[in-house]
Length: 137
Image 1 (cartoon, rainbow, N blue to C red):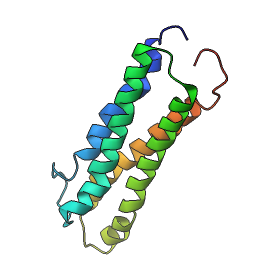
Image 2: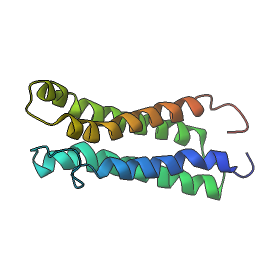
Image 3: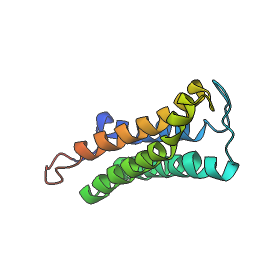
């Protein structure tokens, strides 16, 4: 890869957008409010979302500047996948609380969807850059 094509820069840009979206639910109340401490919201949304944004920015800059190291691309996908898994895992308990009528279902969806999006992005990213021996990646 002499210079990255536009397609190669899409995943980092998606990571930046999805990471920013992942940070928003605690501060943009839609579909009902969850009674959660601000520290928990920070750890469940802002921290993993910030990690995803940071990974996206670093890889985007590396892709624009020069050929990125294949290991960097693979590790970046793993980090994004772990951030998404963390977000999903920390919201699983809300499903049973919704069934019991303690929290609004819409709020749970609003808080949980970014974690699903981050996880899917991380898996897609990791699969995209899994074969690090290919010369065009």
